[in-house]
Image 1: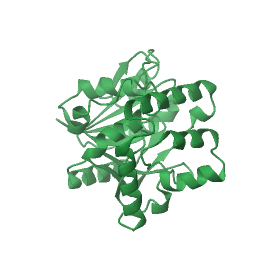
Image 2 (image 1 turned 90 degrees about the vertical axis):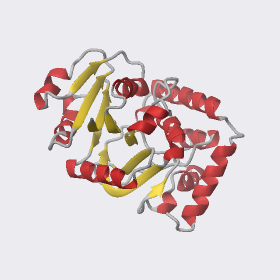
Image 3 (image 1 turned 180 degrees about the horizontal axis):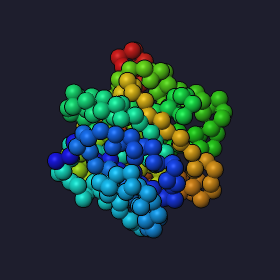
Image 4 (image 1 turned 180 degrees about the vertical axis):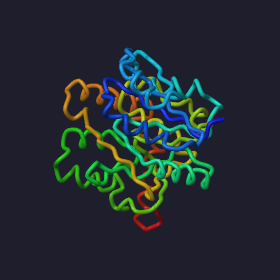
Length: 274
């Protein structure tokens, strides 16, 4: 039984981009396992990664999406670990902070997902704690991102008024780094395969929310966050398609659960009950 299994899904990512995280993950033995899923279907990183640690498992897969890549590992190791860690290739966390995160998970015991503070390489905070989105949220953020309207909306939608200083329960956490209770993750059937890329973390967060999605700001994770969907027309199309699938699944405008939970979160945290 592993303490933690971590999965990194790669697709044409360079060895330089992920080598430091791989080395850090195996800095000491805590009964951990790292699995790399290569969605390029080539095995181009395998030899170099196994030179770092030959216990790394390397899975070569067709590119059926980010969620599908993680699901391969989630299903393969069902019942064999306490925690499952989902990480982007452009993530770095210090080993001692990973241990601190696991200790926190042990302490709270019952949860769905835990996410620490996410920062850019220069130390700037990333606002990755969110309410459940509505169609208007995503439209404004995508097409009116630098306007006063978008900034005003993000103040609530990204919970900026909390200053990200204290532990809090959050509806949506970022798929760039998710520590999941493995049993709860299996119970919710992992990622929904209808999403190729984008919105799969929002959908998973929504299903895991009833188990408790926690933001833990005592440690930080560095995320380069390239925002590919803002620079590529192809990725813009994929993002929009995923949003349509998400709202088809959860309801577009008459989502009572979304409204009730968002209202509760805003009311509670603006009163300082974070």
